[in-house]
Image 1 (cartoon, rainbow, N blue to C red):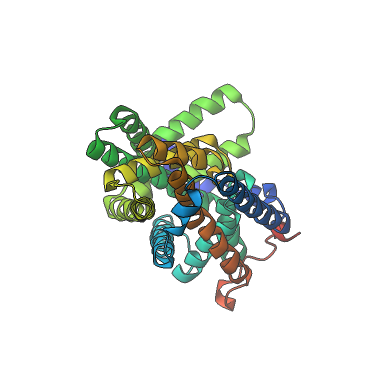
Image 2: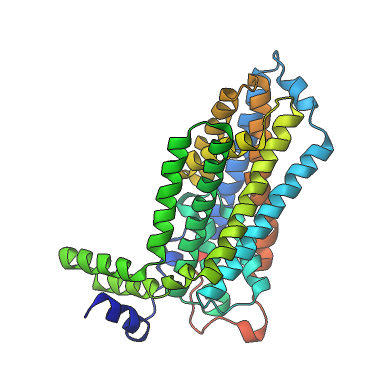
Length: 352
């Protein structure tokens, strides 16, 4: 059978995927404890950095940050979460995820509670909640997860490229990153190409036919993201959302007395985000923090100000999301109305 025929036949002949993502996830309670432990470690590390710099201008720099500045940073970060949550809903509809928009937004926010856990559990738990409460098979929701991740990287790299163009710095690096992400986005929208790659791989591996069958079923839903009426709105939401995060850095840097422009803020924040993503560490911990600190120093920010800016920006753009997730996850775990109950026999491995 050709790849195009496989694409048309996959939804009809492939059995629903087993909930492997849920089965592989660690217990929810243990994951939440790890999240709290990571938050304590981050606060301790930030406090230690400020204590070590107590004889410098770090404390004086921190004193320059008014409550209004902190609230502005949190508001901009919240705009980012709302825009990305709306993108999650739009992608879900494009991929045929049958769940109310309000519930999907709730699951998206609840997933933030596990952002800093290993294995991207925060993203997996969103799929698990869709399966648990609405019976959405993982083969239908996995493309939603893939599209969400790719759109984040595409938006971040495009903003980095714009920042590089405005500042005339690191243009070659950011252009290469943007091109790679655009190619990846194009590949996700070309299910036929992915199916041919799966066929080629299966012929050589000659094992795990069930795994390849489920992969084909996932590929069958991918063309939905390539339609302009889907791609353009979700890409716009991605760009606006991550631009709000760049504005968080711009507000903090200017408040601390460094005359940086929007281009520099976009370049620094996005390159630090890429460093965190490439590191594969939960939430980019360590890599994104050090990258942000180093890049702020490169644009001429004093050491004390760079330390304070890094701590505040990471609190506003990462840990604020974790706190919101911890507040909304209990609501997301509650079963919705009778009409949206999950399928009979669905396992709840995260609650064991």
